[in-house]
Length: 154
Image (tube, rainbow, N blue to C red; front, side, top):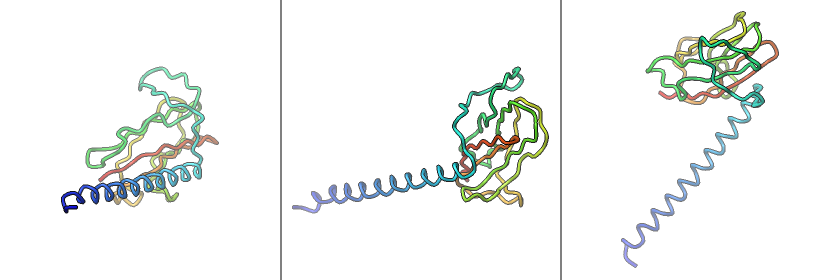
Protein backbone atom coordinates (compact mmCIF):
# COMPACT_ATOMS: atom_id res chain seq x y z
CA UNK A 1 0.00 0.00 0.00
CA UNK A 2 1.27 3.44 -0.82
CA UNK A 3 1.39 6.39 1.58
CA UNK A 4 -1.23 8.24 -0.45
CA UNK A 5 -3.69 5.35 0.08
CA UNK A 6 -3.22 5.42 3.88
CA UNK A 7 -3.52 9.20 4.25
CA UNK A 8 -7.33 9.41 3.82
CA UNK A 9 -7.75 6.56 6.33
CA UNK A 10 -5.67 8.35 8.99
CA UNK A 11 -7.55 11.57 8.31
CA UNK A 12 -10.87 9.72 8.67
CA UNK A 13 -9.82 8.24 12.03
CA UNK A 14 -8.63 11.62 13.32
CA UNK A 15 -11.86 13.27 12.14
CA UNK A 16 -13.98 10.57 13.78
CA UNK A 17 -12.09 10.94 17.09
CA UNK A 18 -12.44 14.72 16.96
CA UNK A 19 -16.18 14.50 16.27
CA UNK A 20 -16.64 11.99 19.11
CA UNK A 21 -14.76 14.28 21.51
CA UNK A 22 -16.89 17.26 20.44
CA UNK A 23 -20.10 15.25 20.94
CA UNK A 24 -19.07 14.16 24.44
CA UNK A 25 -18.14 17.76 25.29
CA UNK A 26 -21.48 19.07 24.02
CA UNK A 27 -23.37 16.45 26.04
CA UNK A 28 -21.38 17.34 29.17
CA UNK A 29 -22.05 21.08 28.74
CA UNK A 30 -25.76 20.39 28.15
CA UNK A 31 -25.95 18.25 31.30
CA UNK A 32 -24.10 20.92 33.30
CA UNK A 33 -26.43 23.65 32.06
CA UNK A 34 -29.51 21.52 32.82
CA UNK A 35 -28.26 20.86 36.36
CA UNK A 36 -27.58 24.56 36.91
CA UNK A 37 -31.02 25.51 35.62
CA UNK A 38 -32.70 23.03 37.93
CA UNK A 39 -30.57 24.23 40.85
CA UNK A 40 -31.76 27.84 40.58
CA UNK A 41 -35.42 27.08 39.89
CA UNK A 42 -35.79 26.81 36.13
CA UNK A 43 -39.32 25.97 35.05
CA UNK A 44 -40.63 25.19 31.60
CA UNK A 45 -44.26 25.24 32.76
CA UNK A 46 -44.94 28.62 31.13
CA UNK A 47 -44.52 28.81 27.35
CA UNK A 48 -42.93 31.97 26.01
CA UNK A 49 -45.03 34.19 23.74
CA UNK A 50 -43.61 37.46 22.58
CA UNK A 51 -45.48 40.56 23.75
CA UNK A 52 -45.07 43.89 22.02
CA UNK A 53 -44.16 47.04 23.93
CA UNK A 54 -47.11 49.39 24.11
CA UNK A 55 -49.69 46.63 23.57
CA UNK A 56 -52.35 46.27 26.24
CA UNK A 57 -51.13 43.22 28.11
CA UNK A 58 -53.58 40.66 29.46
CA UNK A 59 -50.94 38.64 31.23
CA UNK A 60 -51.76 35.23 32.61
CA UNK A 61 -48.19 34.15 33.29
CA UNK A 62 -44.98 35.69 34.53
CA UNK A 63 -41.99 34.93 32.34
CA UNK A 64 -38.77 36.05 30.76
CA UNK A 65 -40.18 36.73 27.33
CA UNK A 66 -36.93 37.07 25.40
CA UNK A 67 -33.31 38.19 25.51
CA UNK A 68 -32.10 40.07 22.44
CA UNK A 69 -29.50 39.52 21.11
CA UNK A 70 -28.63 36.04 22.33
CA UNK A 71 -25.76 35.19 21.89
CA UNK A 72 -24.68 38.62 23.04
CA UNK A 73 -21.49 40.44 21.94
CA UNK A 74 -20.90 43.30 24.43
CA UNK A 75 -18.92 45.41 21.93
CA UNK A 76 -22.10 45.83 19.84
CA UNK A 77 -24.19 47.41 22.62
CA UNK A 78 -26.41 46.00 25.33
CA UNK A 79 -28.60 42.93 25.66
CA UNK A 80 -32.30 43.70 26.18
CA UNK A 81 -34.12 41.39 28.60
CA UNK A 82 -37.89 41.53 28.25
CA UNK A 83 -39.93 40.40 31.24
CA UNK A 84 -43.71 39.95 31.36
CA UNK A 85 -45.31 39.96 34.82
CA UNK A 86 -48.86 38.89 35.69
CA UNK A 87 -48.92 40.83 38.96
CA UNK A 88 -47.28 43.83 40.52
CA UNK A 89 -44.61 43.35 43.16
CA UNK A 90 -40.90 43.42 43.88
CA UNK A 91 -39.19 42.42 40.63
CA UNK A 92 -35.61 41.21 40.80
CA UNK A 93 -33.53 40.47 37.72
CA UNK A 94 -29.97 39.18 38.03
CA UNK A 95 -27.31 37.49 35.92
CA UNK A 96 -25.58 34.39 37.34
CA UNK A 97 -22.62 32.32 36.22
CA UNK A 98 -23.32 28.61 35.78
CA UNK A 99 -21.58 27.91 39.09
CA UNK A 100 -24.27 29.97 40.87
CA UNK A 101 -22.11 33.07 41.42
CA UNK A 102 -23.95 36.40 41.11
CA UNK A 103 -22.45 38.35 38.21
CA UNK A 104 -24.74 41.41 38.09
CA UNK A 105 -27.98 42.55 39.70
CA UNK A 106 -29.90 44.47 37.04
CA UNK A 107 -33.11 45.33 38.85
CA UNK A 108 -34.53 45.10 42.38
CA UNK A 109 -37.60 47.30 42.80
CA UNK A 110 -41.39 47.42 42.91
CA UNK A 111 -42.95 47.20 39.45
CA UNK A 112 -46.55 47.06 38.15
CA UNK A 113 -47.84 44.11 36.14
CA UNK A 114 -47.03 44.20 32.44
CA UNK A 115 -44.05 44.30 30.07
CA UNK A 116 -40.67 45.42 31.44
CA UNK A 117 -37.33 45.73 29.67
CA UNK A 118 -33.93 45.94 31.33
CA UNK A 119 -30.53 45.99 29.67
CA UNK A 120 -27.20 44.39 30.48
CA UNK A 121 -23.92 45.81 29.18
CA UNK A 122 -21.99 42.58 29.80
CA UNK A 123 -20.19 43.80 32.91
CA UNK A 124 -20.18 42.36 36.40
CA UNK A 125 -21.12 44.10 39.64
CA UNK A 126 -17.50 45.28 39.92
CA UNK A 127 -17.66 46.91 36.48
CA UNK A 128 -15.27 44.42 34.90
CA UNK A 129 -16.39 42.73 31.67
CA UNK A 130 -17.90 39.29 32.17
CA UNK A 131 -15.89 36.65 30.29
CA UNK A 132 -17.26 34.75 27.32
CA UNK A 133 -19.51 31.87 28.29
CA UNK A 134 -22.99 30.77 29.28
CA UNK A 135 -24.94 32.71 31.90
CA UNK A 136 -28.35 32.47 33.53
CA UNK A 137 -30.76 35.37 33.71
CA UNK A 138 -32.92 34.91 36.82
CA UNK A 139 -36.18 36.77 37.38
CA UNK A 140 -37.94 36.69 40.74
CA UNK A 141 -41.37 38.18 41.45
CA UNK A 142 -42.62 37.16 44.88
CA UNK A 143 -42.50 33.36 44.94
CA UNK A 144 -42.29 33.10 41.13
CA UNK A 145 -38.80 32.36 39.82
CA UNK A 146 -37.95 32.03 36.13
CA UNK A 147 -34.60 31.61 34.42
CA UNK A 148 -33.34 31.83 30.87
CA UNK A 149 -29.92 31.06 29.48
CA UNK A 150 -27.82 33.55 27.61
CA UNK A 151 -24.43 33.39 25.96
CA UNK A 152 -21.77 36.10 25.98
CA UNK A 153 -19.17 36.07 23.21
CA UNK A 154 -16.16 38.33 23.16
